Image (cartoon, rainbow, N blue to C red; front, side):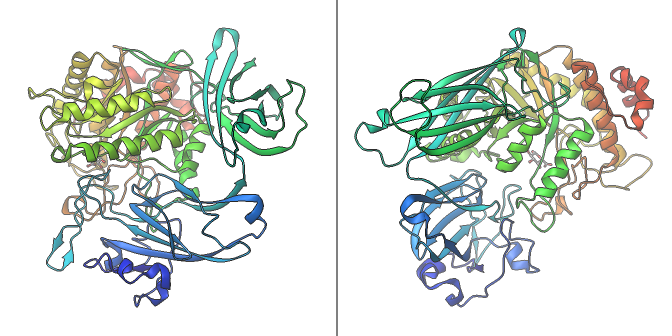
Length: 631
Ligand code: BDP
């Protein structure tokens, strides 16, 4: 990898590094790991805070046998932020928003049975019309100044890059939609298949058919169908095992396997499946029904109460880079603490993460990085980008049973004025049309005391709000929390008549920072602050339309360097290296008590078992706990 000058971000283009190879760029060539954020891998200050372009390059080999018979594809899981790709010096593809995959058929660019050169330019500059927005490329004198408006300080090729091949005629996409009828123990899987490739005339209609099978976890076929154009149908599964969230069922996350074979040959009815197989696609499928109304969100007919976290894909050294051990550790901690949901703050998590959420039964509020949408840019350019990233997100994650809602924005400027009414109406109109059976939500943070109308809240199916009572707002006044949270939830309910969820709340806590009297930033302050929120939540829960509590944040994380965030953001319930803070034990008791109380879940056989009596009455006792002396 080489770093282009911040002052001359175009130098790589002007000097055609993609043609000559970066070794001839005259810049220092660094070894760089992929997938990873590049910021913390070396010891260079200037690379850590670099604003502008870096250029990655590597050679790769393409098997000779792929050339004639197959199609060759190159796929990037995520490059943050803007990417341009050359193959053997030829411009091949570009993509403009981190955290989402992009790919292209590259058969015309590569040499088969030979070595090829891949060059990727990655530019982390964001502007008023990018999503997320930023202004991190304002020049100051002859250097570009780092001005991140948000937590997106890292950059690089975050996720895996795959070179793969498909047959010439291939299955290009599948849409799956499921339903679960509990009284009959019946599951329905509706599918729609898309083909692509070298079709001539109307041959697509007649020359192919598909064999669709649904297999259970013992590899037994539980439903099957042979079908022809337009390649859509539905499968019925008797004695079905539904997909359930963690702690709502003893066996959460049950996945069937949908296998679709594409056959060449005329459709001759159900018996004929011996023609040539052109392509096979396998997809894990969880069978569940998701519904919502003005009071609740229901899965398989049961009311959901979400208890979970916002989080960052963040760890030492690799930054936002895909990291399997850390991902598994986080799921293990999530189960340990008894949570059932993640809000993917503030960008889509990796595809591997989503697959794991399906398997573990962790529900996902899926979000793209439309954070802090700035009022001064609410125009058509921004709107189109906003629509585009959400469409890409929905396309990527539509088949995951874990996804229970799309979050269209985090803390946007949504009060009346600046054209926000038109902006959000257009956005919501578009996203609603492609929402694939999920409700739309967002995390609102605009003040609710003023007389400005909120132009987004009223359009949502579920209203989320972020509020840092006693942290950013009225710091230290713990006594006011319970009333403030209750008042705000009641306000949003009155204004919208929709289900309400708290999408972020919390406070920093630095381990071993203790003081009497109580100080802000100590573990005890964090605990006191949470207890007072719990009081409000337990009152609100009685009203049924209050459907969840999401903590900010799962773990401490690194941010851009500012005086207010020395050592990063310490809002974690776990430390950055994923060890529990004191609050984790309290939250664990609450989450398990809620699971037991709401979903009759079994609590873990840990030492907490001895405290069972305490746990059963926990929901009442929490008030005693939180009204105790502040110290
Ligand atoms: C909220 C943001 C979140 C921040 C948090 C904080 O949604 O991303 O990290 O504030 O400052 O407003 O801790």
